[in-house]
Length: 308
Image 1 (cartoon, rainbow, N blue to C red):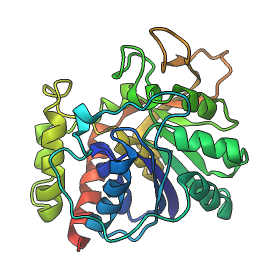
Image 2 (cartoon, rainbow, N blue to C red):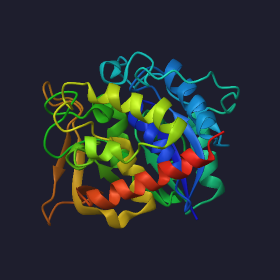
Image 3 (cartoon, rainbow, N blue to C red):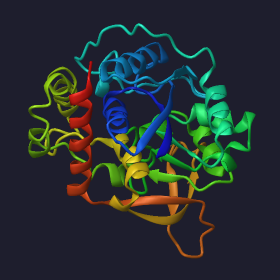
Image 4 (cartoon, rainbow, N blue to C red):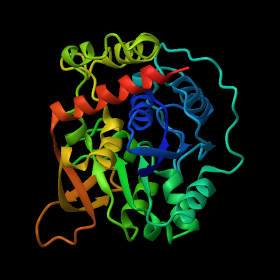
């Protein structure tokens, strides 16, 4: 049984990533932490609580950073909707967040089980950077660190920067400079995970999950102009899928540095695949698309059959 701690900013694709984690029998979700990103923390934390109750998960949720380390907050509400889940309105959660800040929750959870927890970050890296600053040994204690963010070609926040990195470049710099080997799932990989009409047809018949969450979320997500032709990219689920089935992905060692001061390139993940580079990360480059959607369809089916 693998264990995962998910740091996220729900967010439509975060919602699907959480469902994938919950519906995978070989994966235990040790906790969920929230950060401001796709929308503000006043939405990401309630969304995480509501999603866990909607799916029938019994897992702690801890509230994290409400702004980047140094910069003014930015959001992707034009892509995810004003509250983060498009047109979906879930019941208000009955549960409350964990009393600890996400930074302390991350440190406590990983320290209690060194070598066992896969830390997966699918939002801005503010919480992870703060956790590393408070407890540098976090980099030694995790089983692996997987991040959805960056790109080795072009971005989506700007031509140079992907949103999660560009929203808090200083935090991303701290994270990529730490003494571990992050696995980076950037746009070059996640744009291979498109929820096409054929893919979405596979979700028909999943009852409440499909009718109340998957279809309306994907309808809203897919209406964004960048996705209309090929279907929306399910970015965050790729990072979770790597923990479950790493064989679905091709990864290449590279040197990744985060640009924090460039006038036009702030937030860029400058990626060097040269053999002689001082490699500090694994960068995902290719996806077995058929096996990926098989994995998600099976997981969503398990979630749908066990929902309250």
